[in-house]
Image: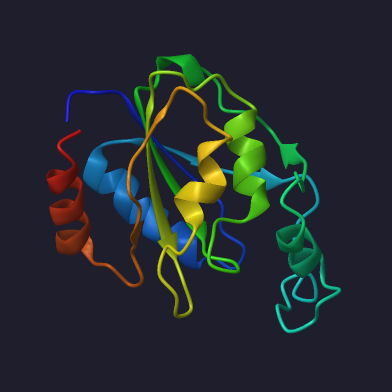
Length: 159
């Protein structure tokens, strides 16, 4: 892969972080952790509680949780491999915050996710408006994907 690639990810419990490290290594990409300004507690992540922080954020399509930090030199990346857990059949709204923080026109964004049981769901539809002018590729769930599976997926992308 000759393009400059960034693997950016949000991980609430560590599962997506493990997948992102595999992806970054296989792609020869830089790695960046997308961090919320206010970390999520176990109570915040209780999807069975309709008043939990994550439930409230996901119920509001305009929710944009604040980020801590920025990617230095984002303009130099051509491809962003974007990892996150699936929440309510899409990416957490924190991912929209991340995408909207940069001018991504002309960049290729490839989502990947971890999930307790669902697929990518409505992820691309929910992200498309947050990255105008970017190429938003179809995503893939990488639950427990090993090095070989990740390499095969990346090779198929022809980045």
